[in-house]
Length: 629
Image 1: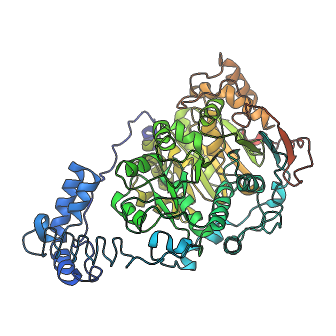
Image 2 (image 1 turned 45 degrees about the horizontal axis):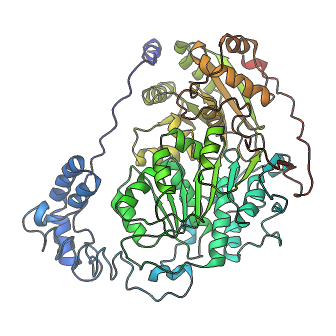
Image 3 (image 1 turned 30 degrees about the horizontal axis):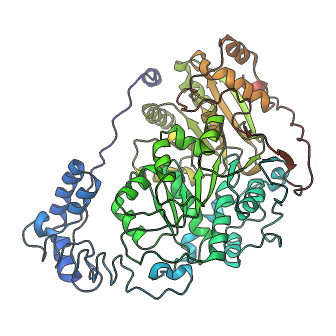
């Protein structure tokens, strides 16, 4: 059986087509079953829902496949009325009006409540975020908002963080004073935010937080280059929430339940996983402040996201494609945006989101006087030049030798032909402890490796782009709780995975460019802790080896002799966009950790004050890893 398994793992196999995305439909009577809000729920909701849901749902699935998301969902959620059947409801779609209630969507007004989106009658605005636009605030339960806090804050090595080098460049940076602690009197934090910081058990700011928070509070645009796991999310969310609490909500240009939602802060990210994680953190930090976070991303039902936007949105966390879709539908206006953040900016451009980002930034109602911040682990020259077109006199912040790789990650390499990789991987993993993340090139290969490891009594699970959101979430949960300590992933998981305590990253297949390599191995060695990254190498990886060699030398990692021979065999560095990259670096030896403007550059140690200039710390000696070659 082993030979057959190994034969199957000769990887030149086309990827399987995506699983069906057809809607299965709802139960009918959109607001039904629970009285549908005010009046027509019992009759329209129960009868239209229970009796007509199956037939309406089936037809809705067919309409969803043929006519797109919106049309299919309308019919899928219908009852027995006009589409789902003949006699279950009292109107067009199985309720006493359109959707199973006394008005359009099963309640006293459009979406199942006394007001349009289920929030009751409009309330009087009192100048707080709780009542912005006349919305009725629904308190969240603390235990639900902070349910994942324990897993996310364990094991941060702040002593190691204090020795990380920090560089700032840009005009008029002399007045930027780093944040000594979250209770620093020089940078007062609003009491409710401070209470939430204590709830998530943040003891002291990380280096990127020490500098990014005061920079953003000083109303400066910021380009921050920092490793994954360095606290970037809090570094941009804290200043946004602080400034929103100080200024209060803007004067309403819309009312609760109006067609367009007008967020004040917009955070763009490349993947649905990262988008959801940022939104989860935003809910924590904004808990009990009245500031409402809404997340929108592709691959999920757009109708529910429209409903959430209609209930009120102050911070919108979005993927570019879905946000553009909602803007075209007239559901989101950017007229009130004061703060724009692009997280993992280089990945968004590499994934082809440049046109959507341009449409968003150049949108006619996007204020030109907004504050803009970009965060990523790499910022090649071309991306910096592009960013300069929509950022004003920004400060460039580099934390550590980012754009290279973390000091806390030991990088090892092993030579293996393609047919040898499964067996070699199995040998490595038999004695592995903790969580292990294995990267492969294709979706098909991820499935095969998962099956191969499980057949050999190792608990593995895979994740890739063809999995539904529910399947991906379930796989990540099993990985987090230790039921499946080995996660096999394609690059869809390289960015945005917010999982601490990954002890080992294995590149069964090397990526085609160094930026992806940096982000992959950045899953370990997070929060100042040590990590291990092992990569399989052979002649098929020649396009990346020279650049990878420079990266290893810069990180003071030991390079095996056979790796040097392969690297020297490469006639020239990869200058064709680094495989899938749309933005080649153009000769940057620091791989994105350098401000190309080079004006007023200042270097600090993360543990020092702003006026103390330091020389870069000496690198630790390379670990003896001769046993791995």
